[in-house]
Amino acid sequence: MGGGLGGGFRSNKAMGRKQKGKIPMNNQAQNKQTNDVARELKLTPKQARELHDEVSGEGYGYHEILQIAKDMFDK
Amino acid sequence: MIKEDFDIINKNMEILVGKEMRKPIRGGSMLDLGFGDMIKKQTRRFDENKEIVMKMVEVSRYAIHISSTFRFICGYDIIINKDYMFTPSNKYIQENKINEDNYDEEKFNIDWDIKGNNAFDETVDKYFPNNEFKFIVKDAKINRFGDLKIIFENGFTFETFTDLNGDYECWRFFEVGSDKHIVISSVGLDKESIEE
Image (cartoon, rainbow over all chains, first blue to last red; front, side):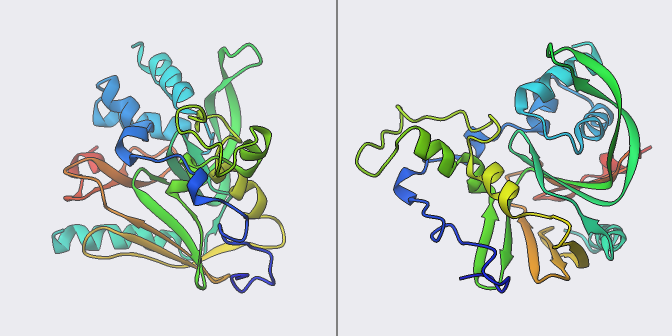
């Protein structure tokens, strides 16, 4: 289906994604995000807010976020 | 969730109405949505030697960071969801000649966090905001569980669900530069996040 956008959008199926080729996932195990950095470095809620603020709009990978957090808080 | 928290959160969500959403990005596996006008901020960036340097950049004034499950839907289609972050991109599948016959989970255990390896990056690059197709917020509300729904004028809807256990953060809303963040977990609003 085009999603009502003149055919500009294609569904997963239409894009030819094979579900069999999908990496089986465990959301919690694979989640690597800013909150995990905050937990790993034992940041305070205030520091976590500063970290979210710092990485907002940047599109960093997990390890880059970790590196930035260490730089910010001398960890 | 108690009624007081429900009202606080929805009051804050009203800020988004009429604002434009920028192209969705991710920080690791955290979805990062930006709304409103662009503002300048001094921030840490990586230079060509991967060293951290301070730079002045432009970012959206408002942000929602989502750690829990989400999806963008339109009509009867799910356009993109969290699972896309852990799904190989078509480009990766083609380059590594993956097919139904040779698929081996360990052999093709991709590093999804590398930009372009996963279907999320690929789909967002292909289909999300450009000059011709804007995402203007028509309505943004939570339900009594803290699930957030954002309806856009273009017919798209964004949904996130508080599906993480205990007090694990599901999503947060904040204005860049502000020390007050609205942080939601399965147990409700994190009061500590809005303390001075």
